Amino acid sequence: MAGMAAVKSEPARILIVGGGYVGMYTALGLQKKLRSREASVTVVDPQPHMTYQPFLPEAAAGSIEPRHVVVPLRRVLRKCHVLTGRVTKISDADKVATVEALDGHVEEIPYDVLVVALGSVARTLPIPGLADRGIAFKTIGEAIYLRNHVLSRLDLASTTDEPELRKRLLTFTVIGGGYAGIEALAELEDMARYALRYYENLDPDDMRWVLVEATGRIMPEVRDSLGVYTVKELEARGIEVYLDTRVKTMEDGHVVLDDGTEYDCDTIIWTAGVKANPVLAETDLPLDQRGRVICTATMQVQGLDGVWAAGDNAAVPDLSKTDVDPAATCSPSAQHAVRQANQLAKNIVAVLRGRKPKPYVHKYAGSVASLGLYKGVADVYGFKAKGFIAWGMHRAYHVSRMPTFNRKVRVAFDWLGSWVLKREVVSLGQINDPRAEFDRVTKS
Image 1 (cartoon, rainbow, N blue to C red):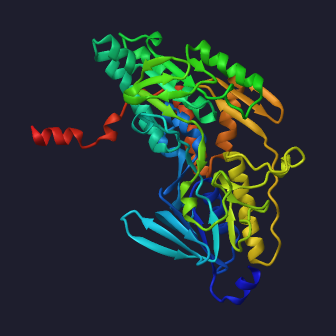
Image 2 (cartoon, one colour; image 1 turned 60 degrees about the vertical axis):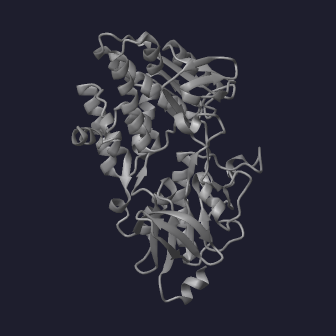
Image 3 (cartoon, rainbow, N blue to C red; image 1 turned 120 degrees about the vertical axis):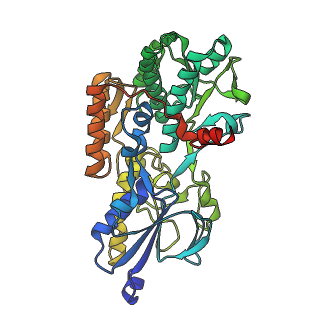
């Protein structure tokens, strides 16, 4: 790589596919470290922004303005080329990536250095009704939709005289007991419970919130005792928790669990894990059995020159666990992705300048999770906390990790506003179908 860069008179062409944690942070690092005309950096992503996913639950609950949990790529990557499009194929043999732009046209982008940062997508299962009834929780659009949807169920339930319909409207199911599922459930339930004070004919006991988890515990990232505490906290709020339980079907909103439980539900949130982006199957990169790109500890793709990968779509050896499990790879988390991206930018620059890259080493620091306003759990460097202290740790940690000073300030002011002026509990469901009212008027 160094020899190639030295011989070429043109700058090295660095292509970053994906604008999430790894893509954006790697590009940020490169634009700070690269010399003039040393290399050009192009970032390709279907969205023009990076989403800070740990704040999605609070955005859904109305504690944070949704626009403040996303970072505009063009604004922060001013020295990079940002292309809004979807990578559909990569041929490293030809050093070319195929991109489908928003208008549908397809173009091929050549590169000298490739960074695979495609991330992950929701892992689905062949459950009848999932495709029609389920909604994931990985994007800002899904968070906005769920907020409006949950609040609109309260509006509908307050206006109907049919007991069975009201029961269905006020039943909410979350499938998956990892961090995403627990935080989405806790924040949305907390928001809905708060909103009910403005509905004279509805009571918190009218709502039914259900968590379904296929394994025997929730939030495997924290110690068992905090997982047990979280279950007790949720159950104390009237939330039903089903462990070691799977969903057999959810056709037409009729949920059937494998323990025989059946009920009708109008809101089904799917957070049962993630998988590497399936676009990787359309590449000539080496993949493991889970569809992730096989990497060395320096995040170089195994057996290929000038190709790097990190984050959820990469099988990066976890050197902090080699004494226990030599085959261990880094877990799919924002904690690893951000740190990998910082090291990745340094490694790419080092190789371009003829130096050796350094391996990525990070011992998992722990986790923090919000369970609604003023409630949380934390397990950080062996220190465990719960309740208000853990909730404060959750907010402090994530605002410190939020990209750009601009977004840190906006999020902090959102929190201040929510504390002083209380929650906003308005449903803006019209944004899901903005032409409905105009169509009604023009056809009347």
